[in-house]
Length: 131
Image (tube, rainbow, N blue to C red; front, top):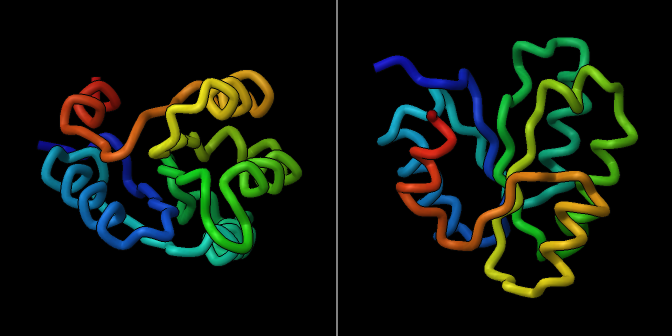
């Protein structure tokens, strides 16, 4: 089975959540390659460093909200400041253990990110992305 995406990125400060998401992505053929980052700053550096090579950019980014130094909200703001081509190429899916209506509203309405799911990511959610 051919993977839907060439490259997916996971940004989460919790290594167990990265492991679970990576296994679900690879076992369900969502992506050929998975990039893992425990720091939003390092992930942003990778994206900026590859802005002129869109083939190196991830098509989908699984992004945790609450992380040290740069949180998911700030990461989204930084991505939105970049070239429109990058924003169009990189779809963001916010993944969080929060069930706060305020956070969900902030992600979906204020930040314009329609994809939001609770941790841990499930096989059903991954399968919904493949369809």
